[in-house]
Image (cartoon, rainbow, N blue to C red):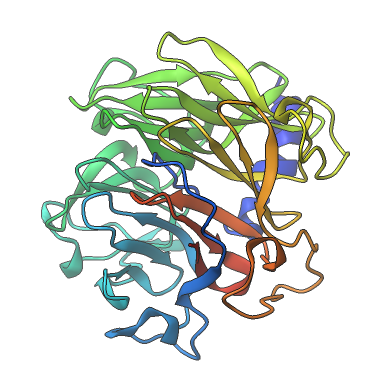
Length: 379
């Protein structure tokens, strides 16, 4: 068991350190209309880090980002620069500074003050983020042991976890307050329309998904089969279905749907690895992927899947189960930067190691094009 998990984690999860895992998609509202035919940059690609300017005039390294359902602000965990926000007018500003204020062992970490404005304390490198329907933000810092909650008015507190630094101790605390539980290393986050928050975690007992309800109580939501690990984020639709990412020991990736009654089924992917990115125009359950990095779901249950190896976003129709590429040329980049210009047709757009994706309240798709140092939008 341990060797299987170790193999799969090394092949799929630990590579997030070099590919900058940022898993954050929780839910969305509408199915996009594909009269939307242009991909353009909404943040990044500037020459240097600047605030108080149009977001396309600054540089950034977005490990994670999210969109507020209450005001459509785009929140960005910018590596080495802190938590930033792009408002509805397109101006970017700093919400909280990046600062490592506490030495633990040989390393330094951000241990923020709690119950204060996040702007007056620190944030670390935000590796995972999600926002709930009320606009509360949940973030996890790289190699931390806690998930923090930031309210819409900017107050930061511990949401889940007891350790300031990740430990390999098995998960603990089910049935009690999440703030008193051990959560391990967080691989991704998600939320649903009821306000439940999902934590994808890896620790000494393997990988699992835990859920914190609106009263703050934590429980285990899903444990994968012995030959598999859960990866990335959790997405949800308006019917209460949850969508998760699963990787087996051979390296094959799948997306599963879990109903409100707890019944799971495959949405996309097979148990066979090494076939590349195949199957467009056919049933998603016969499709294969290079590597699934992130998922998003529309209210109707259409599922969007990021393949960071092949640089594409694919969509699974909830009504037909057919999968199609919706963004990305599919050209595997040989360099970290294959930007190729802006305002491009979706299937001609070059994406470089795309990570987390979101749908806003209008159904527009946002992409963390991490290899091109940009947040991009399909509209």
